[in-house]
Each structure stands twice: as structure tokens, then as C-alpha cells.
Length: 194
Image (cartoon, rainbow, N blue to C red; front, side):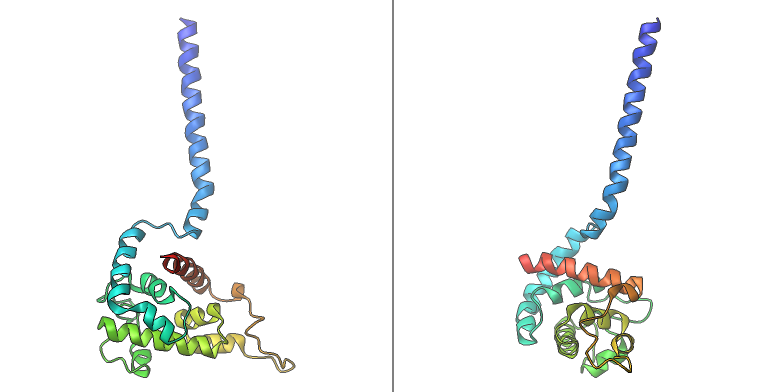
């Protein structure tokens, strides 16, 4: 009887160790998977964005406004998950989540109109991209955090004659903006490759 008891105890211990090992591996890999963009539902969102990308001719808009390839698709993915009726708690609306004031500045009357919203997003991102000397991180930071915040963030010090666009540190921005930049850059790579 002792032999059977020992085998059962040994098997239970092995199963317990395997379960603990599995959980430890999952715990270690989860941040890596999140950094790589794994989120449940991302595939369904990507399919919607691909449909919009073709319908709205986002690649043509990127070329017209001299934006990096895949940027508009990535921003749409993150901002609205491809839902033209999306609305944030802060009042942003549409595929590219325009606030009322920014939409007005871009000549966008109906923020939920897909084609007009895509054109306004390309125009606005193009302006930001030029403003920040083609620095994608600062462009995305301004889109997410606000133009005024980024301008304050990068303004030259009294003794500094050089532009700070090349010297800024992402780590000094709010965590939400840092995460936003990383996520858009990762998504852009996905859309750029297809």
C-alpha cells in the first residue's frame, strides 16, 4: 500500500510543479505579449480597419500628406477600433476620435462621417508631422496628449539654441501617452507589412 500512495503523491507533486511552471511562464510572457500588441479582439478590429483602409483609400491619403505608411490605419485601430460611431467619455467622436475644436480647425463638420474624418486625420497628422520635423513620437504625442502639452514639453530652455525635438525623452511624458506611442508604432508595423 505504501507504494501506491507514493506514486499518487509523486504524480500530484509533478502536476502541481507543472501548473506552477506554466503559471510562472505565463506571468513572465504576459508583459511581452502585451508589448507586442496581443489583446483579445485585435483580429476582429484589424479586419474592420482593413475594410475601412480600402474603402477610404488610407494609403493614398498617407502619400498625399507625406505620412509614414500604415499610420492612419494604426491610429484608427487604436482610437475607435474601426467604429465610426465611437465616442469617448471626453467627447471625442468618430473613426479618428476628433474633439469638437480640433475637428472645426480641420474643417470637419461631421466627426462620424468616415471619409471626411479620414481626410481630416491625414491633414492633422500631416501638419503635426511637419511641425515636429518628421518626428513620429512627437507627432503621436501631440495627437494623444495635445499640441499645447507637447509644445510646452519640447520648448527650448533659455540657454539652449538647439531644437529639443531630437533630445526629448519619452519617459518624461504621461504613461498613457508613452503607451499610446508604443501601441501605434507596433500597430503601424502590422499595417505597413500588409
